[in-house]
Image (cartoon, rainbow, N blue to C red; front, side, top):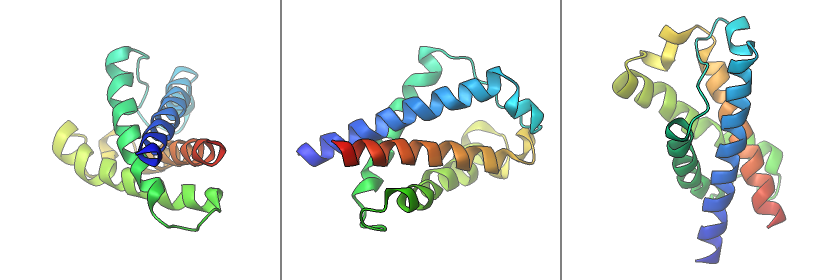
Length: 129
């Protein structure tokens, strides 16, 4: 039970940091510079689902991928939620099309980097716990 609580907490913290990074990227025009129309407003309604899902995605950290090499683990594990976001959530839930391409051609890169940040923070948090 302790391990489950730790991975959920690490995933939620990773989601918080990744969400703040995405918000900052939108706020300061980085996403606009990439021609990606992602510039979320920082609000509880936007942040809450990301924290919950980040915690749930944190259970991926229990997979035996790359052992203790958290840097490589983050790049691999970041792919799983990114692929779900790009090929399930965007086309079927939000209507942004496959891979969110209606938001811009570099949307897949932005989303993947978002989840890599999530995975890195979560993996480091879990390692330090």
